[in-house]
Image (cartoon, rainbow, N blue to C red; front, side):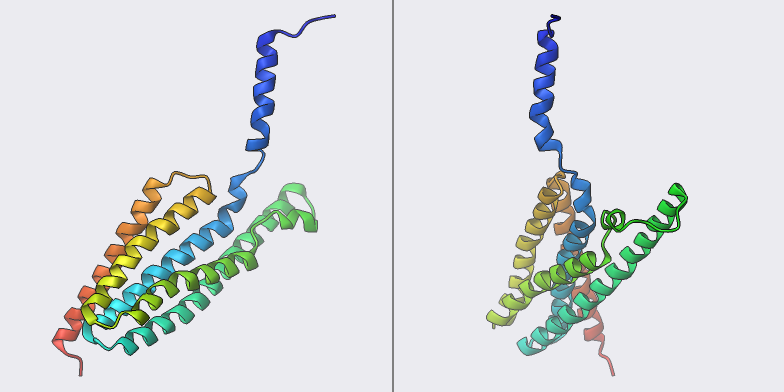
Length: 207
């Protein structure tokens, strides 16, 4: 009987040990994960920026809350519709390509199930946007002093953005540092520009 070299046995054992960990294809998460992370980030930054823009010219807490709530509803609907249309277009393209590749008129349902899901992407995006937008809304609702209210929005966004960035990177098994830094810096820039330009326009007066 021929013996199996020890090196081959070790290599075979290592391969078997690694297979359970590497079986899952994390790229399958990419579609809904991208939509969810983008939605949460957009909900947090855009809602906070809008509220700070209003706060730059009007110190009324009620005005900031109503503006933020309107931004939450409009943004969630917009994100859902945008993701649905975008992913559906991608789905149509991929199905058409599969038909050309396999020279078939129809594609089996189980084959389509493995392609990007427009409804899943839309739902993930809308829900994530709402969850992100609710964060600055809650902060503004409980902080009455004007200056503390503006500062609280900046602080909570600075804390929440790294959480969203880290969560998205971990779920997708991607590096965590760079995405987190991009989100935080991008959030600061968006809030700063919105606050500054709104204050500038408000100081000039609008008739």
